[in-house]
Length: 126
Image (cartoon, rainbow, N blue to C red):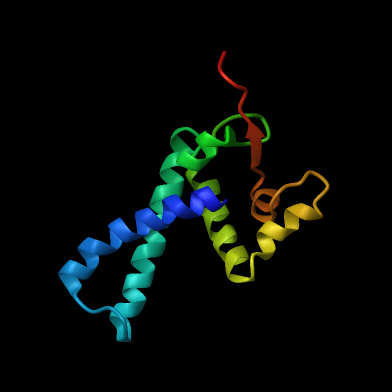
């Protein structure tokens, strides 16, 4: 998750540049809220694009983890949107959605349990 955070931080920095260049100061007022929504949209685009295409973000590829349905098939856009929303909510609640995995019988995150997705190990290529 730390590696994912580093990559996401870079994505946010790159995405913020054109917005702030075009709009200017977005520290207060309604522009601040628009900027926040824009960044959440960028994050959703980042995660959903990787999850829908290969089931793996760049960090997940490094750690050989793939996001799939219980039958091993790729997830749908609806699942990606719900998983992203629940994961974001879990983060906003002091990471509760991620702490959930410590107590879950299958070691699944809360958002995976609700959406019906799984993180699986990808075997090494020989």
